[in-house]
Image (cartoon, rainbow, N blue to C red; front, side, top):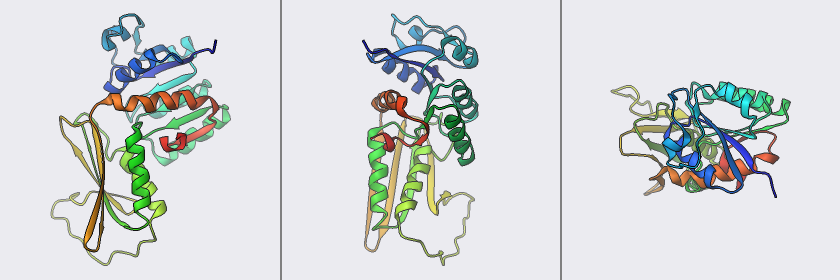
Length: 266
């Protein structure tokens, strides 16, 4: 019988952490071996997921949990301030890391890639685990060959603290690789209120919206002579991310170094 893949979840009290624990626990190829959250105050996996048969405590010291469990996979859904150190901790202990937390910059990604290769293990940084979102990025990248004028609007729940989203940044990077070279703009713009035109990633404007009631949504809007094209993806429930989470975890055994983006697993 094939041995199950041992997984611990960091950020276990967050909404993505809770949903991930449910998905891992019911998959016959995975084993939820531990859970950690810096805010933990005596909660158990059972008490936050409703899976009463899993009576694991949620620890508040990730490092101690890693030393105790020695899992195959560290799944991180924490926050931009914690994710880099969490990933370093996992890789130094020869643990493959699946990172769903956004906020890692290019320098940090290069350092994590080098650390993973040094320790003969892998790290996957996934801005968006929804299959539909990956397709949206691919479609936008292809459309940019023909409609190079584009802006991105990303919309998320009001508890998301970083902006723009990792999905929006990844989309801009993919578009930039495909669209024709852009001549310098000959229009001198004036913002009456600073920031109205959004942030600039790869010469693509990104606008961030944060509102209660939203989960994760993105529009990529292309403009051309006499026409426009909008490509949109909506995530209405975090359960929609779980097939992607489970798939990436299962494929980490063959990964060495850094993989950035779920499209590389499809």
